[in-house]
Length: 87
Image (cartoon, rainbow, N blue to C red; front, side, top):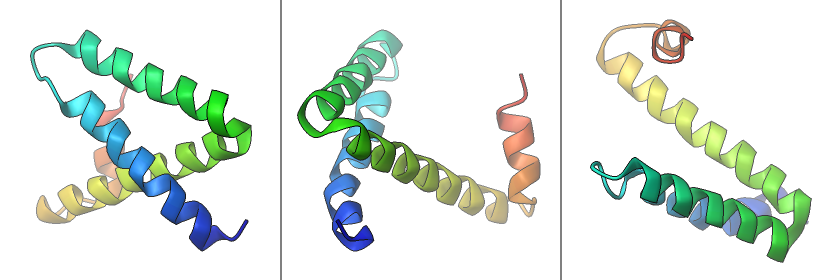
């Protein structure tokens, strides 16, 4: 499978995942459940390879969003990641 084909097939899954998590600011559990259902569906219907593609695409989408926010705030993206995900 070509990377372009994988990207075209995976992009809608990434959007669905983001929408699931962001869909209801007042009900985190519902978004989390929708995301879990999506991941389960990907594994069941399309296998581990598609799940890998999904995880990579989702990570790249998050990194792109963080880079945009960092640029707007005149920060290095790596610094913003450290602040947002400091545990």
